[in-house]
Image (cartoon, rainbow, N blue to C red; front, side, top):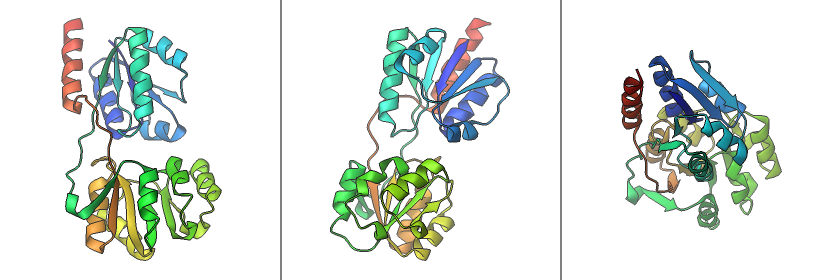
Length: 249
């Protein structure tokens, strides 16, 4: 059974390892070198690194029996492109959903996007810890750069994005997560953070630890709402694959 996994997440890596151990022919597609590092080397799993064009996705999926979309829950454009490619290639598509985190609505300011977060923060005072990645930093261009403390991956691309926004180098926190509650609390206190902007990356993305740290330190949590979507859990998809592999024996 040939399975293509579009990944870059903890769940995608774990699923590829489990499926390869069961005898599936697994190809994992990740968009970046960072995603490749996270995927690592797993016996029986091949990895494609780099973005694919629409035509390349279709050609890849024509050779597969099943496609599993294990991309990040906020990467909606990627999910849409993978779903379309599966339909055109005639490949079965399944979406792996990351479980949402329980949210204390009374303690959280919820917005729909990074742009809305920036708009809400415009009339506030105090330092802002941005934990939503370098790709969305441009949304905060209207805010005082001295207030912004982006926590980004330690990559050249992320540092260039920070510099393009005029963020002082002393404000840039270039580290790879996820982070413990204690680490988040230390960061908030060290940089005198008043607002923490986050997405709901669930437990794999360290969101509970960020929420707990914000509550413990009195920082206001500003949450970018997760897009609504349908799909299946890790165990549900694993069970489907088990059944298919057993039937093929």
